[in-house]
Length: 326
Image 1 (tube, helix red, strand yellow):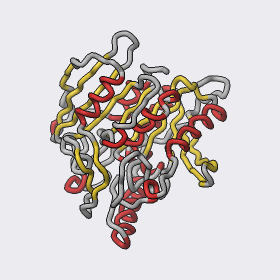
Image 2 (cartoon, rainbow, N blue to C red; image 1 turned 120 degrees about the horizontal axis):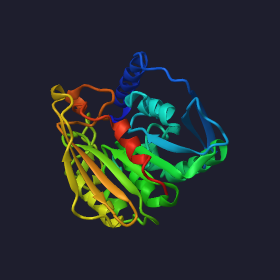
Image 3 (cartoon, rainbow, N blue to C red; image 1 turned 135 degrees about the vertical axis):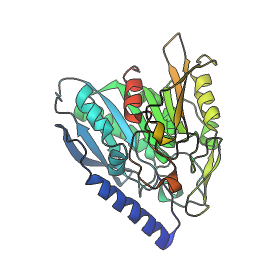
Image 4 (cartoon, rainbow, N blue to C red; image 1 turned 180 degrees about the vertical axis):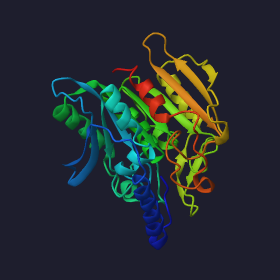
């Protein structure tokens, strides 16, 4: 989720992050009866890897929904499983769907920003992550009898921004997206030509120290590298409200303060297209940082901010996804 300084600091930072996740892996998460497996295929002469969770009830003759969960900068598919506390795996087991956690090239996604100073390989070499994820969808439909009308994408940070890019470029394959802690890149907003409406649920933390709620340049937390410019949360939501022809007047509700000790409060705004059922929903988490609500506090709050316990992002996202079909 974080882009660290180059050289030894980069290696030390990523090493510490992955060691932290390895430690998290030792925490007693609930065990589920399904199958965890790692798979790969070659795309554009690169081996692309991903984790799959298949529920124990899986029957190849029954079409199931697919959730693709994209990690943030500096993470990988395994880190996404852990940061979310295996929440999607639990829900997949309960409600019968398949989850895929892909790996970006060298811990990053080419999400449409101009990360000239970041110098990560995904952006430097213009890695075809859209093509890879599109091919992954095709592969899952073929190999696991996924329902092509019920394919969904979520992600955090770099993965959230990547989900916005997918909605722009392969909307014909995606029913809905749910970005967490990410806004639309300015460059992408000028070139987004979604072929069809895509329902959007966004979760943004107001006090996010890395991806600015009010928009502007994204900076790394350790060294002030400019990692690209994004729209504000309101502009990102407004973009899809307009694109999906939803009512410009939202239904606003305050979510219950279920954990007064976490220092956060959540407001929900819902924009609806009453003619076709397309939705755009924003959960704004006041007091929350660059974190997954209900997930692991993967780094100290002084670095990434607080994790809200007032909502469970896994539950909120899946409840939203299962209402929508392409």
